[in-house]
Amino acid sequence: MIHEILPVGLLQCNCSIFGDEQTREAIVVDPGGNIGEIESILERHGLRVKAIVITHAHIDHVAGAKLLKENTNAPVYMNPSDQESLTMLDVQARWLGVAPPERVDVDMDARDSVSLRLNEAEFHVMETPGHTPGSISLYIPTERKLVAGDTLFKDSIGRTDLPGGDSWQILSSIKTRLLLLPDETVVVPGHGALTTIGREKECNPFLRGL
Ligand SMILES: [Zn+2]
Image (cartoon, rainbow, N blue to C red; front, side, top):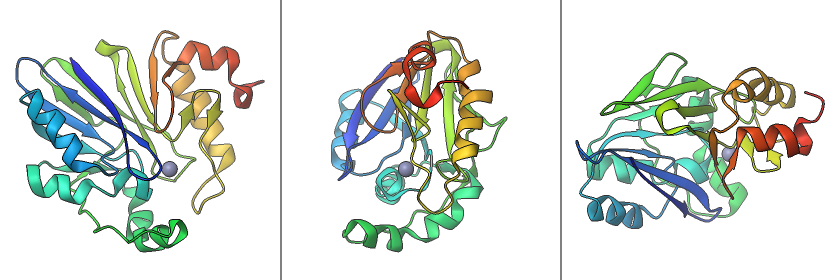
């Protein structure tokens, strides 16, 4: 499996590009910006985008989705509980003092039990609300990887002080969903360095006593 991670946009959101070597199909997660750069990676590997997945509707994760969708015709997956936040992209832009991006139309609901496929690999949607009501993670068991959006970071967890955030809920999502994954699962957070489930169980100060 091809997996390229590139920090995009003003807040350096980790965008993941997964590609299958045989079918040359790709899934792009959180195209928050730098769409030209994302497209040149796709081109370099000869990949065609099959799906665009948004872990949550914060501007830094979703800002480039409309352009990428226009250029690739790929369907956009997002959890419906973040639709309200998506309609507030202009408000989010004002918080950051940036121009509001064009809003993408969501095609498919990313809910529990929804799975996307790249050849043999399954990408399972896990609802992990708390950072936002519709935050999701993507678990790829055959790759032993979790794309965690802004739910879990190396040594930290997602902030819950923005509208729709819920600090009890994010801890519950982490405890009852993410920490049940195998320790060796590599976590690709929405920002910053990669980690593993095992390491965060041991070392993450926000998860002590869970
Ligand atoms: Zn966020």
